[in-house]
Length: 494
Ligand code: GLN
Image 1 (cartoon, rainbow, N blue to C red):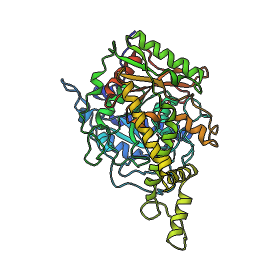
Image 2: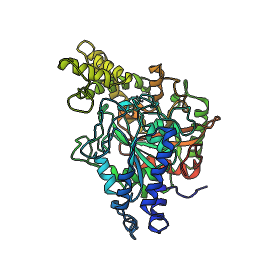
Image 3: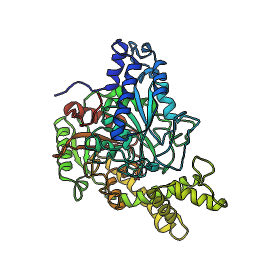
Image 4: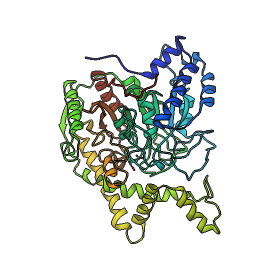
C-alpha cells in the first residue's frame, strides 16, 4: 500500500546534481510555463525572467550536492523555482497586494521569509495575483482581474492566495508562498487540489508581509507534495528579531520526520461540523479519508468544538477591526498612488483612498471602523475577543483527547466566477472551516483527497495543537502515500 515518497524538490535536486539538468534549465522552463499559462490563468502579476535566470546561474549545480549526513539548509532549495504572493516584499520586484493604492511600489527590502528562501538557493520567478490586501475567498477582489482555476477556467481558484495556488496546481512551480489570515492558503489549496499549510501563529516571521489583520496573519506554503511543503517550512520558520511575535521554538527537521508511521495517533472527528451547508461530494470524500486513516492504524475519536458556530462572526469583526487600523497608512503620502488635482490635504486623502481601494476593502474598513467606534466597541469588538478566547479554549480541550482534528477545508468545490461576488455573506461563509485556526493560532493543513463527480478537487483539513506541524505533516504524508493524488488539471505545464 505504501507508495514512493513524493517530492518534486528532491527530484529537481537530483536532476541537477546528476547533471541531467541545470538550475538554469529548470528555472527557464518554469518561467516559460508561467508566461505561457498566464494568458489563461492570470496567476502572475509580474514574471521576472531576467532576475530569475540570473539567479539560477548563480546557483551552481555543485551547491545542490548531498553530503553523507544530508543536505545542508543552505542548499535545500538550490535551483528550485518558487512563486511569491504579491503581498510579500521581494527587493527589486513589485508589491501591489492586488491593489491600485500601492501604485508602482517596489519595496527596498526583502521579507524575512524571502531572505531565508534565497539563503537556501530558491529562485523567485515572480509575484502572484491575489485578492486586494488578501481580502477574499475567490480572487475576484484583485484590482488586476481574477485568477482562473486550472481545473476549470470558468471557476475561481479560491482566495485570497489564488495566484500562488494556481501556479502550483498548474505545474508552473513546485512550491509557492501565500498568506493565510482566515484560510487564504488552505481554501485555495483545497479548490485547486494541492497541499497548503498555515503554520502556528508565531512560527514564521511576518516582517515584510503586508499587514491585513496582524493577530491572524501568517505566511503559508503551497506544494504538490507534503514533503515539499515541509521542506519549505524548515527553511523559512523560526524566530526573527525583526518580528516580535515570532516564537523562540526550535525548528524541527520536518521532512526527515515523515516516516509514514501513524499507528496509535488519535484523530478528532467533530461530527457537528459535517452537517448543514456541506456539499455531498465533499462530505463523502472527507469521510472516506477518515476511513483511510482508520485503516492506517489511527484512532478516530469524537470531539466537539462547541463555539465553532460563532467563528465567522468573530473573525469578520476582528479581521476588519485590525484591517481598518492597518490600512490607515495608505494615505497618498507614504506609498505609491496619489489622486491627482486634489485642492487640499483632506480631500487628497479622501480621493486617494476612494480611487485606490476596491469595494471589498472599503467595506471592511467601514465595518472595522464601526466595530471599533466608541459606541460599539464593547458590543462588538470586545465581545468578539471574548468569544475568541473561548474558541481557543475549545481547541485546548479537544486536543486533550486527540493529536489532530479533521474537517473539510471548504464547504464546496470551486464555484463559478461571478457566482458569489454580489453576496458578501455567501462569500464569507466559504471560510467557515478555516477561520477557527487563525482565531486560535493553531496550525492547519489542506490535503487533497480526490475529485468530485464533476472533476473538481476536494481537500480535507488537519488542525493540530500549537507547534504540531511535524505531526500534521506526518499524518498528511501517510495519507499521501496510501492515497496519492496524482490527477492533473486540464491546464498543466509541460
Ligand atoms: N477569505 C478570508 C477573508 O476574506 C480569509 C482571507 C485570508 O486568509 N487572507 O478575509
